[in-house]
Image 1 (tube, one colour):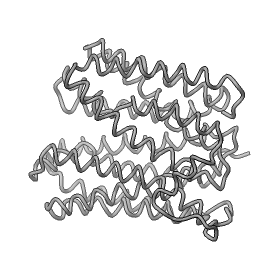
Image 2 (tube, helix red, strand yellow; image 1 turned 90 degrees about the horizontal axis):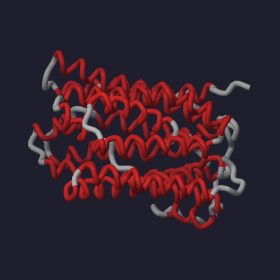
Image 3 (cartoon, rainbow, N blue to C red; image 1 turned 30 degrees about the vertical axis):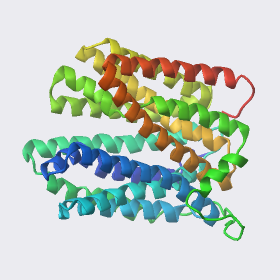
Image 4 (cartoon, helix red, strand yellow; image 1 turned 45 degrees about the vertical axis):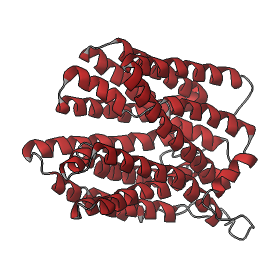
Length: 393
């Protein structure tokens, strides 16, 4: 049987192109906003609100996808909004306009993510979920490598020409939208819109009540880990303290993404053989090593080794966690299940970054990183003990 189907290829290339567009702007967005007069506080508020919108909308639009019986519609709409939002940002420097454009981009991601992941799930069997999600994450992350690299090259030849990058990012974004036109819904999910269920924004949370105990147990463990897993910015800040070179810091970030992209598919294949749970636990173990190492070391060569392990950790957890969750749900509820997890995870991740920043400010980087590492050991223990009984993984 053909594992990587036509739909998986299309979704993967769409994600690659979209992430290329997004990562073209990743290194320059904060710099550009500061250049046009935005304070660090306003940038933080902007990003915080944008991330809150993306998180909650993943749950809402995931449920909407299940209710309507549609997947592709939400995928196309989400990628379309993200594509048109990027060139809108530099048109005006008025804060409300920048907020609107940035929120439009994040909303696009919120609309598409759960439906896209459900579509990937429908292309796989329980025995091939790891490699399907792994392949998609590999292509998506390869886009991050391409985007960040292109941004570095462009800024080398045209320093501080940030506005042009926003317009350049439109082209891979619109190519992704055009490519998504070749997608088709595979399964008739029998639309549920005639039921008495309300379409309220937080209606997706009702899924928690009727979900299986296995789903709840897996999600609880992943959410506790999310509360410990702060933004990668803190890892890059530690690197910045040592090497003091912006280009090298961004290069380290690109290196991490490259490792992630190279290992995501092979790790997915391995996960299908060894079990999704075992693979995820191994990934969490690597996470502990990375954060403990960042706490204890100030050596640039050690940092490179740790970011190599961090790329493998990401390959062993991000796609794998979605694959595991999708194995615990029915097809007609997959988008809701993934969207509910993504929504709750976004809240945890926001709290994680705030708490890590606070601990770093009061006690220093060593305490911040070691607290995360030790907390993750308890999450590993949880997964090892809670799931001694049989569970689909």
